[in-house]
Amino acid sequence: PRANIKVELVTSSAIAYSRVMEAPILICSPGTFCLLPSLFMEYSHSSYLTASKTLYPWFYYLARENRKLMGKTIELQTEFAVRPIASMEEMQPFLFEAAPPHSDECTFLRGRLGEWVYDDEYGKVAQYKTPLKRFRDFPDFKSTKEQPYRPATSYRWVDALCPVDLVYKEGLCYAMEELGLTRIYIIGDSSSMQMAHSLWKLLGHEDDPVLRSDQGELKQSQRFHFERHIDCGKKKAGFDLVYTRNDLIEDKEKSSDKDKEDYNCGMAEYCMPWLRSYADTKRVGGTLLIANIGSHVHDLDNFHGYFGNFLDLMSEHQRQNDVVMIRTTVPGHEGCQAENMVPLTTFDEFAETLVADYRSWHLFGAYNDIQESMVRIHNSVADHKVEILDVNPMTVLRPDGHTSTPPICSTCRKDDCVHYALPGPLDWWNHLMYSNLINLMQLKLERESGEKSKK
Image (cartoon, rainbow, N blue to C red):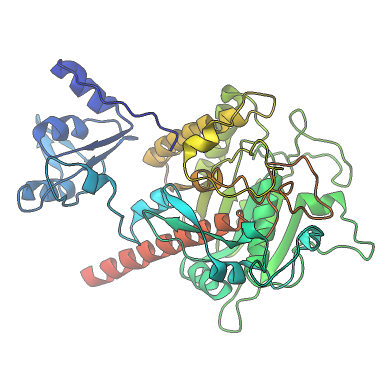
């Protein structure tokens, strides 16, 4: 939604070929003008060619086979997503065609285009069995027959491209087992901590993920890290849910005393050790690692450096059965304290409110673009892929539901337009994660089925 699109006619064939070959993502209609330069694009670039199978059957053959060009055998590194379209002159049916629900395209597209719809029935299932202790009291909200729940909890995301399923314990347990995963490890800042808290409650637990002392006070170490086990029943092994606070997702084994308030990296950041635990070779089963960086970085060069270091760590330590998801960063919303806030309908509505200041919210879109580009390059050469969990497009449309949006909880700050009250919009980060995980499971099962049929 952030992209500025312009139509430009180029009279020079040389310039046109050059632009086609340099495009990170190429979408074009059939023909040798598009096909030939797409074959010579860089490894990290992708081509999407639209075709009619009856008119261009050789496209399908070319997508499967290697060709010998100029006496040299080349491997097709470009990706051919070949689909029929209603009219060869009209691109719109292709551009807005929903991807197959269990295709690898959906892990890329899901969450990027859609709308928030008010739904009373969803509002019922969105409530946790018991509230998180921090969000148990909203003194200004009075439940009525017409409005039984806080309004921000009753909006459902309707995806225009790929369905988003609601996460539930049995479904997540099944996906984790099929993928050989025994742990969900979430690393990042306080928003990542909220994602971990949300997931714990969405799986039906009545207690908080962090067990408090009798006095109700949290030790600083509990704010930095927690680990709980998810019981999947007698027939399944279950899995662990772990959160570690690391604002820059860098590995920092020598941290300060966890029970002190001192920051231990950057200007005002916490970077608790996580790599040794993640890469523990004695651990049985794979890990779903969900990482985020952005909110605590304030210039593009530093972001590029921190994220590049993380990808280097993944190149060295990611195992074959691990799933690594990079969650995109979401800025806050100016003026979230206003009464009667509702979801936005377009990205432009949000963009009009962005200002350049010390919070660096105006840079988050660029961070996400850099991240996506670096992941594409990483995946073209790495042994194991890194996935993008793009929560940004859906979440920037939610100025409502922040901890400072009326009605606010009794323990909430009145100047926090970044974090969300729970339950709320942030729960959909976990629904999106679960839906992508189901996709990955389905693709794995299809690959295994295909391999068995060949034997």
